Image (cartoon, rainbow, N blue to C red; front, side, top):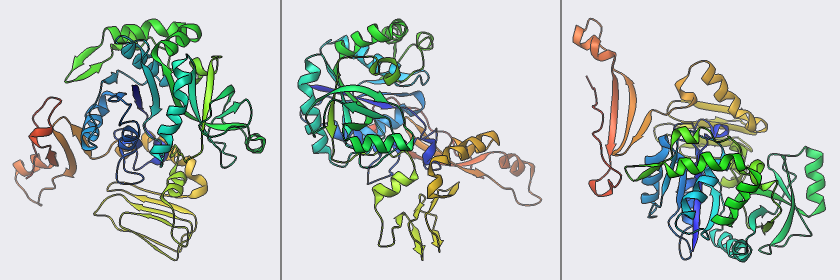
Length: 417
């Protein structure tokens, strides 16, 4: 059996305003009818797979279980990081947790915010890499490149890659300059680094001991001292804080010698910006991608999305424009500046705008509540009315009792005047 491990942290600032720190991109429905997290969990489920292990932050724990249940997927262990420390400590924590039951457990580690349209083809690639993983190799999955992409890391392999045929991985290449990317694309023996790995728990634990030994003690201690909380497993914060914040690529993968890559050419995207979302959505005859209540009049090559059912977004005479409207924020940018959206988040944070990181809706074990804004008193109102003006109006949604499987709590009161 393969134990999926879904890495479920990050804030996805390049997809603001739909993706924010309080509800990042993996939980949103960017492409299709499910969130990226739900699609990832579904892709790594079914015959041959156990319930997924999820590594996430405390703020997202109820969203994780709510979305898994909505997708009809039984949640496995949900490990709560006291703070984000990048992917290396997260992978090591999952391996330490699974190794307690069986050191030979096969782990499939994947981000939870990628798009892989052909789930069956991806499972076939996993099957192709399984013998190597069980033989003690670290298997990574390399995407067959379709362009000279400078926003991804690349993998150099020994020989011309063929889909589902494991090949020796010779080196990792950081995000390249344009001329280097074009040269790698032309050579034919490079793949995009998708950050997806297959190995046994004992293999990756040995790799950490060899290449990142200082991380082993604090992460192991964080797992050993973890506390159960409403069905979640909270890693020990004091031990966790001692682990270096570093990616698994830097900590282990770029130093290990026992790596192979499985080439995958059936389609993949990390949705690293609104331009990537537009490509996945597809366009009309004029190249426009529309979502929600969006209308394009005499527009070409533009992405228009209205993310709130009460918002109508209309574009007139636009060319290569991104326009995203939510209930409390609007983004307008040229498609060539898609990677600069994160700068908008930095500017909003600096000015203290709550929209930089938070949505009006907040998730709780019992469901969610949404802040609608202050109650405005009528002119000349009484003192009690003025007092109510300092409160916020809220609406809430409670889950049916039958799905409350992670504890319960009373919802906040709605203060409606």
